[in-house]
Image 1 (cartoon, helix red, strand yellow):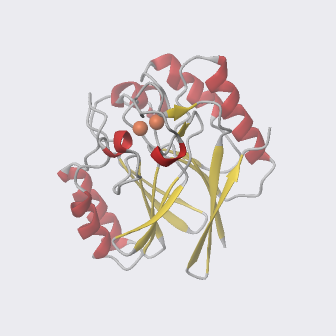
Image 2 (cartoon, rainbow, N blue to C red):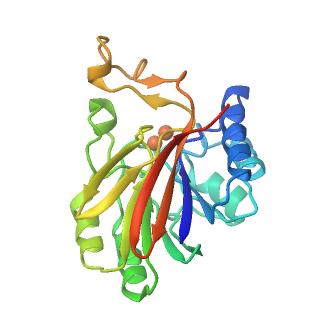
Image 3 (cartoon, rainbow, N blue to C red):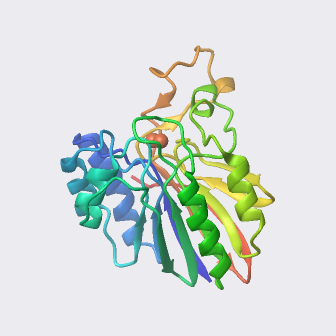
Length: 247
Ligand SMILES: [Fe+2]
Ligand SMILES: [Fe+2]
């Protein structure tokens, strides 16, 4: 049995608020028996080196902590602080933890908020899936489906069909996991489970829950508590539990 704690969008921005929400989440997880912690992007708010130094100091645990970039991240600063290398190539990483493989796909387009899996990333994922013998979680920041908030949907993954073709050609994908939506959401994608983790930093408002006209200035609820998902993979069955982080 594998237990994956899936969180997303901590948006470290140097503020006490962002720091406190991530610390609260990581403190909760230190009391949980999980195999791996996955953070699906937007680690920082501005992609600054100082923000990545906070990420490096705070997102630590006795189990592997898997990180991937989001649209608020910066490849060069991410690489410098978190990976100790240079360059701006897509940050695609393959990690093994808890009896599963995690294909961490960089879905960012430098300078833009929408997402795209570049040809080199799709080729890399194809290669990973062709050789995989364990269950594979395909992880990316941008949601490849609509999440029913028009603002967030305007910056979703631009080439979901290409991702669908790659994951459909494999028989080893357990699920597709994403962030970016700042919304706990479950769907299907290419016949597979797709789960978006809630945002640590804030929660997206849904149009039918408010009489306000949603704009970027009011679409994120910063008062909602941070949340996460526990994915349990047992005998080929995936069950995803959505939880608020206790205060
Ligand atoms: Fe975000
Ligand atoms: Fe994002």
